[in-house]
Image (cartoon, rainbow, N blue to C red; front, side, top):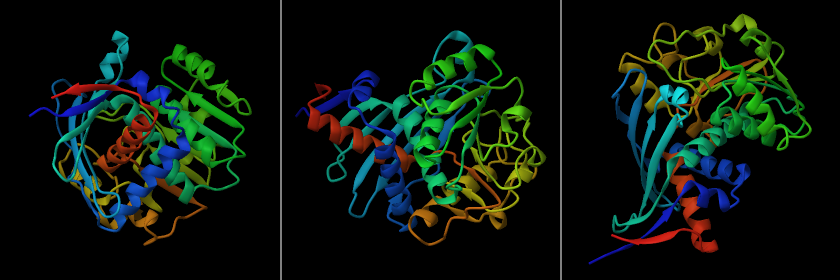
Length: 327
């Protein structure tokens, strides 16, 4: 017996016209389901074929009224950047939760980029100052781009972006790509991280995830009232940035990863230092905080992939996009 599976390339996914608000809403619904304890989601497991590289497997079932199941296989190779290859690549598999049969296979790089930026946006929805006008983006690859789009979505008064990348040419490409999308934002390429974060209302770090982080941004460089978002585990912010109102996307995954003894060591908060996770926030169990020092480590969780993958599949079927394969 053969089964029909829908294959979706990155170009086909991009052609669907899915915007940041749609992905943010999907990610928030997944967070809320986590808070209601309707999700089966083990901490991501992985192997590390090369130094500072990973290959992760991320299965998840979002139950309740949503009832979606999927698995993502994703790799992150920082060294690819010097080869002109993508840092993040992968495949997402959407399954029928009733039968376990594969419904769709699709590029996971688009999913990973957009759901990660969307998660930052959801966090900013609940913890950001509505008067935010200046964003700082550290690390100007794909994640830097989608995270800035998410900040612009959440903060309508945003009119200044202070940006930095270790490669100056990357900053030039970033500004060239983002200026047409955000015409009301003034872009300020900075020569160092200190100038990039000074005076910013929100700071988002999107640098490569490494086993031996430099943690080059101390609390003293940031505004008294600031939103600090780490998309890169513990690579950039020093632990004192997360001394108050520290939030993670998923408590279990953060603490499990910390217990493995590689990431979130040397001063990063343990269980007693967590204000909340985003499941608790989005399900109404805890309230967000709008002023003062607010920081989050958003590792990326599999519920994001399932919710975004299901959104893509629904739109692709509706628009007749994709290639049907037989398995």
